[in-house]
Image (cartoon, rainbow, N blue to C red; front, side):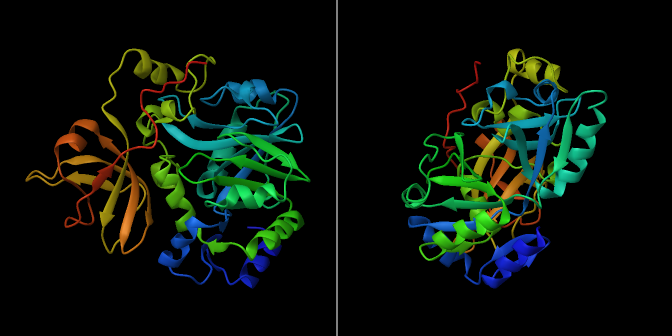
Length: 350
């Protein structure tokens, strides 16, 4: 986290642990009632890799799961980076500004991901730089988010994954049941924007922002889930994060074989739990029968209201349909599955 940005957040009553804003002095219940109006979140728990150079398009096209050629100044995308066995090492939100590509990922896997990507640059004219301290990241969401941002920016992106850059600030429209935007820009410009929105917004921590991603069914790979899943297990084919026509990338044969020949046995589900203990990413999910069989893994979990927990989990489809399930560390709390906000029938046909 940029030191000056951290000081600014602390002046706004932020509680910060490990470069992550936990809260701004409000309870989770108070934070989440603000969805009906406007919330403002720090997103320093994400990192930002800048990719540039004469060969950058060819390089990224050969490494990532989505078609980088579709990214422009006005269109971003989700994508992933796999090992040769098709297991996801990292996933990104990608956008373009100033003729450079930016890969937003979780901060705890940024260093390892950057190191591995650099191994394959070789003689290509490509530069990969960690820009996390140079561009600050905030989130704006809620029923009135579009109204407030439209009063500040002339060309606000209107559709999911669209982006715009105005006055040095890049804005990406995110998927979800509420209007939701991810905003990137230099320190002083983000501080200025924060000041314009603050009086109308409730300031929230990482947990309340993550709830929106969980409800949107958007997975986030962190250190505990690196190499745990192939793309289809986390529904990347259903959220425009996976191209089957772009050509080769690490793990492409495994991913394509699953698409054309295989039968998916595990996929991403959304669930809720009534519990006093928040499950950890990567934690096992078990069946409630006598044999206590493993049924899947937690991808992400966040607190909701009244000790309710919302989770994304990769589960064996057959067990999810027939068995009562619980997190391994909490045998008394059954996971209640809820519908995804998108159709799994939707497969990308670019």
